[in-house]
Amino acid sequence: MFKEFKEFAMKGNVVDLAVGVVIGAAFGTIVSALVADVIMPVVGLVTGGVDFSNMFALLKAGKSAAAEYPTLAAAKADGAVTLNYGVFLNAVVNFLIVAFSLFLVVKAMNSARRQEAAAPPAPPEPTPSEKLRAEIRDALKARG
Image (cartoon, rainbow, N blue to C red; front, side, top):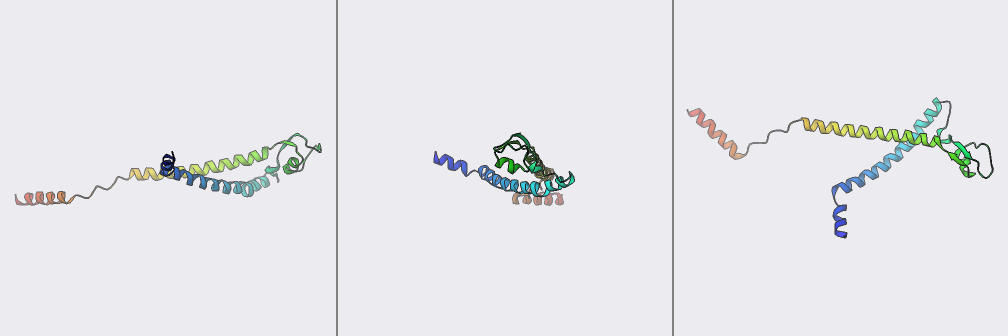
């Protein structure tokens, strides 16, 4: 069983998958930071200073039975039940950026494959025996 697992783990596809997962996780972190720290503040500024990460609907008040909470963190700290649609909007923007980035990568790879397939391979170099036959043929044509 260990031998089978070792063969499976050493296949190129598994290693490629592992590298892809690690790079994907790092890319996800970068995209999350881009959305939270660059894109959403600009969107918030355009929409009149709205902070999407603090947009929520109070479903049930917490321990203090407050009617309103200034931030999502305050509502969670009080134990309130909230519908966090602002966090969801951030996640949707995050997803759209990742999906578009992957689309661009796949499009570039497909374009490179098409160019590679479109260029016909160079004809192989004649073998030494083929060169000798061609010389003999040319010599016979020249004689007669």
